[in-house]
Image (cartoon, rainbow, N blue to C red; front, side):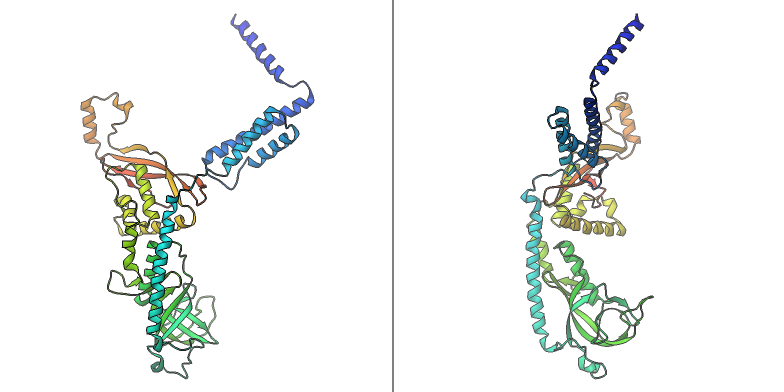
Length: 443
């Protein structure tokens, strides 16, 4: 009886399959073309799904899928199956361009605040530069180039004089010479100045400019050409083009002690030993108070959730609140000197990326797992444990360590999602506060 039923089923299935086979060659060809096109459309849809809203450069099935559907649409414009494939390919194509959203005004407020602060510091720098130049006017060399010839003018005649150089290419023209570390300005036909960059007269102001970029204006790229006021302090004989493959001569030039560094339109920095550093940029003392009035978040709540902590972490970066940024990060990661340096390094990278690449990041709901210790939320295991056993396990398992995974999506200034969602790791010990463990710039 069973064999009879099975035979009837097989015959029925075959009959249905046979009935679906087109009876003429044209119809069979069309179905074959549709089947092949659908295969590639499915593959393209899978690729798009794996990107989860992100765009990528190379698609394995995209071109083949679109070309096959295009031919079908042009050949069989009224076929419902072809129209269905066309709509699917159309949808997948749009999704392959990346997810997008509306850019809210508050997302880019940090850029407007940064520009306001840049103008404040720039105006202060311009005013100070003009005042300093006027004050030193009588001590300025009336003509920078050609350089006064050391065979005609002695050191006593020039020592203490000031020179304004607007072509100091650092680090491109940096060199280690026989008498020190310098940046050269000039050439053999007009003579040389050698700016001493080995002392705090350069290092202090230079670090101040780096603080300006870090805390005020990420839009200031790596400075390639500086304007420098230098004081003539000595004469040096140096080869400004040393190196294993370089052939050069030794030239006499005037050694300059840096007095002020200037990046027109941005910042002026001078040596100043009164603070924690040996340099400051003009207006630096005003920055903290100005920024404090712009902060939308100033502290991390003790009961912060992992996803909210990531939002605060992003806000600290956008608003250039370094103290809040550090408070978000696991203290175990930053308590050593290397860890502190690493946190500062990643801060700089975050600043650059929020300036160049994206303007906002959204975060998904956290997935929390227990990495160490007793897990009260494990319903399967707890089903088999009585209260006494649970108490024992809590005691012997030690401090509970929890890990949360939160995914982020980054959007550029046009509202387009950049790349696929990225996971971030957070940690909590002993039921305390959550901290960001993975703070590298990978939004």
